[in-house]
Image (cartoon, rainbow, N blue to C red; front, side, top):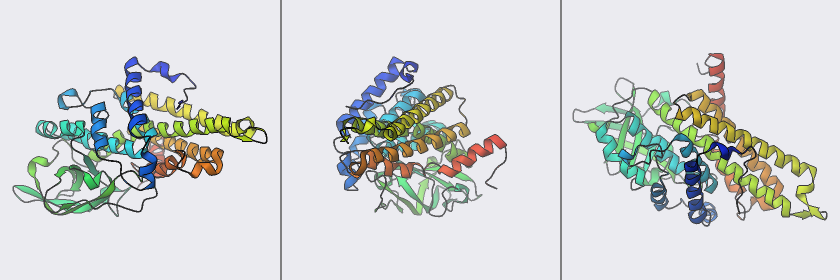
Length: 389
């Protein structure tokens, strides 16, 4: 039985609605993900698309989207708690929901017109449609401004060319929010739909991380995109970076789920595992590991909660979000590694979730802004000097 740590009684800071939402998602994870996730990860087989429909029914897709457009209209602490429970199931589950929510629904809601909101958001909120987000390219990750993907105005449509890679949900997405340069070199957002001629989504194989996630490319070969599919509300890199801030916020909460499950697994194992005639939890070095883990988790919980309050008040800055993403992912991956040590050789088997979380977090520490890039964002914020140019 999973017992998440709450060393500083942070639950007292949550409303009854927050706790009900968390309980519903936790129960869904226990019933639908935990029994099958190790098998999917071992087989390098993406989780079935139908799980997104179930998450839609839970209100886990675009939780902050207003009811008018199919979302539940929840606050950002609710969104964070949902991401925590999904990532306890697996980073692939949280990634799928995070992309759908923050990288597809968020830009359509924030930068789209009313017709686009009404056309796309309800189906994305229900999970009937699956979305992908196209920003990263083969030669442009941390420097998205150098992207090569571009489109031309052809009178009654745009002609899109280029490619994107490392795209979650790509192999089976129905729509993709794609960032490309117009003829003036300005970055714009386009909604590309499956079935448009020249649009293909080859799958990426041979991953050691996020093995239960569908990853692929978005390839555009003279794709005719209707003019009404251009997002009118933003120009420049501000658009995709605002999307990434929303996703990074969700990650800062999500990785707490992975960290807490690793800690809980290690604690229970240490109390049960006997060596030299007593449980290994009685030895000083194991207690040191466990004490440091619960300390770091508690710090991460407080950081995420405070960021959630700022987000609800529309005060959270991109630099504050970067700090939380960087800190909490590093915390989670270190806890996964130390938990694996407590379990010894058993920690590398699929009988326990630790190794799966550990390799997943190797991706999470890189995507939505690498660990080092977030450090430089914080450095730029406190010094007011950019290290990027």
